[in-house]
Length: 92
Length: 197
Image (cartoon, one colour):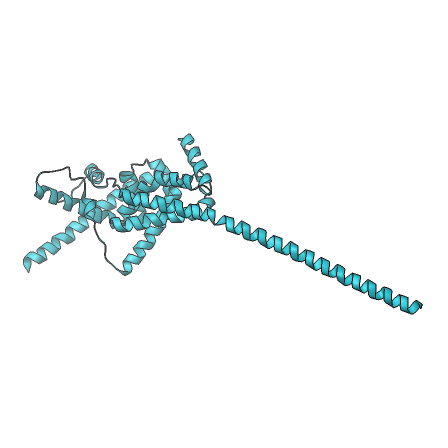
C-alpha cells in the first residue's frame, strides 16, 4: 500500500489508530510505588538522627562552656588566694 | 478544573513531607509519563527505567516545585523530556533502536494473519516516521493522540500558547507526511536494488 497521496484526515485517522495508550506492567507500577514511598519514608526518618546529633552537639558545647567557666573561676580564686597570701606576708 | 488544580497543589505541598501524598501523585501520573516515554523510546524496558528515574528525581525536588500556574504534570513531563533527550544522546553513541512488537497493538483482532502483518508493518512505518520528527513535534503528537489532551493543555505543558500549538500541529502533520513519503521512497529503492541483485 502507498501512503504518498495520504490526505490530512487519513493521516489523523492513522495516527489515532497507531498512537494508542499502552498499559505499563502492574508489577512495575506497584514495585516502583513501594520503592518510592520507602525511600521517601527513609528520607523522613533520616531527619531524626540529624536532630539528635544537633542536640547532642549543643549539649556538649554547653557542658564544655560550663567546664571552661569553672576552670576560669578556679583560676581566679587561686590567684586571689595567692594575692591575699602575698599581702599578708608583706603586712607582717 | 480549578478545584482539581488546588487539590493537586495541596497534594504537591504535602508530598514534600508526606510519603502517602507523593504516592497519590505517583498514581495519578505514572501511566501518562510511562506512555510518553514509551512512545519516545520505542521499548518497554527503557520506558520502565526512565519512568522510575523521572519519579525518583521528582521525589528529590518536589519541595522546590513552585506554583506558576503550570500544572504539576507539566513539571513531570519536563523531567521526562530531559531524561529522554539524554537517553537519545546516549543511544546515538550506540545506534541500536529496538522497536517493540507491543507498539504494533490495536490491529482490531483480525482473523487473517496476512492482514495483521500488513497492518503491523503500516503501524511500524508510521512510528518510524514519527520518531524521525524533532523531539517537540513527537511530544506534541504523543500528548494529542496518546494522552488525548486539548491544544490548551498541550500549550501549558510545552510552555506555548494555544495558537502556537495549533500552528505547530499543522506543520507537524505536513512534515510527517513528507517523512512517510521519504521512508517509502527509500524502501522502494532498497526493494528495486534487492530485486535487481
